[in-house]
Image 1 (cartoon, rainbow, N blue to C red):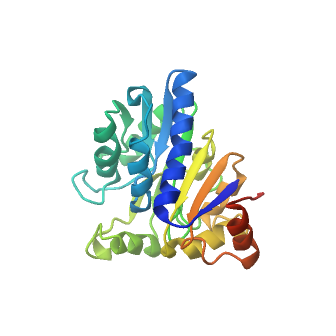
Image 2: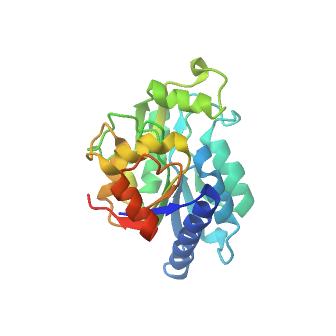
Image 3: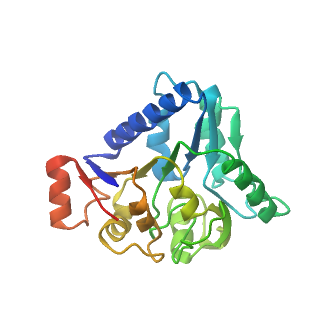
Length: 261
């Protein structure tokens, strides 16, 4: 796994978008279709804005999945990840092949199973991920299930995760944040051929340190990313600020460091 460091979130977003665009173009040029997974949280906005502006991508040949959705939340709610995917990616690119996790379906389990079946029908070329303030990936809060092979699972959201959603202003109060969600499982994320993980902002610094300097453990869900051989994690000075002086020094000297699992 590769860690890369940038001075600010805008330069980080553009470099991550360059990598993502290159992979998408290559996949289209090869098998004729790029299959992608898209994270849609607030920390991904600059990256997604940069990506959709990259030239030379035939978005009609891209198939998109998203990571997670709250159970019971309508698609019209500002905090809906389906809404973010549609507004920030689908409608701006003209993608016609996209799959929504219906968290407000009458049977969320069946919805998760249906989208999961489409997800695993062919390899995923690249997945775009973030890391939450509590170290979660998608909505896999600690302790995350590192063993299930199910592509999407039903998860309970912990208080730290729910407070993050209030802090990002998607909800007025924690009582409004749903307590359960449908989430792509950690092992499913690792099945993508390539991972681009975009983690900006000071509020993510503790999670970054735990994920990349501690043990690989379900108590720090994002730590499992270190087991992927083709993952690149993009940090800015703020999100990297609590890393050890040795690792931070190496990043500042070389702009990137390879980590082992």
